[in-house]
Image 1 (cartoon, rainbow, N blue to C red):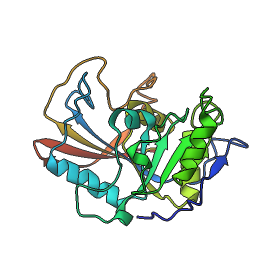
Image 2: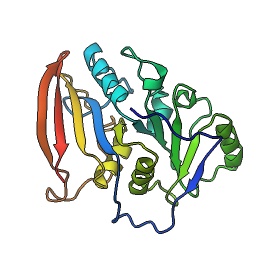
Image 3: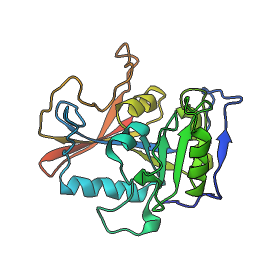
Image 4: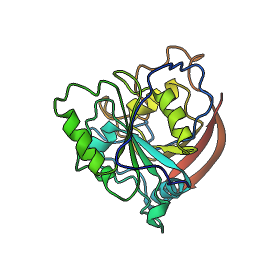
Length: 247
């Protein structure tokens, strides 16, 4: 795992020029990992997300320890306030991956745990960054925390360009622990290489309950993401299924 990255004060990168998303040359290897109920829900309608057992949590943290970066969307930060560190298994501070938060409008609270000094944090945002009149003050406060800000896209983070920039920063593999919106963006742009799913023997129901992938969805089966089974095994009281994404 590579956790060495330039964090001198704050790094504002504006990368909207000459952005041809069809000509990406390199990107990190992306593993999408999720724990869900049998009916594909990440939590109940009351946001009760107790899905994984002890062994599955250890499995996830072993993945965290093995990758260069871990990525979530701002929705996950606002809802769960995660640390995004390795703490369910034996690990040192330097084992923590670089934390990447996709936050188009820079809504991240300054007291979010992902901004602590347990690991480097990158915030991917946009040129416009919403209509927050206090945005410059927030940027100054983030500078004090040595947070790296990457600006790519006008109103919405350009995920394809972001992957290219992260790769150039030495982040060669990423664990994607996103919610339905970010997951859709990553799949839609064909940026995911592997999928690992823990399925708990539970049915949550609820049309408003969060799901693995949301977004607009693909219109036809021909357009959808195709997967190839890599592995499958029992864990806790559920199963883990691992797929590679067909390119």
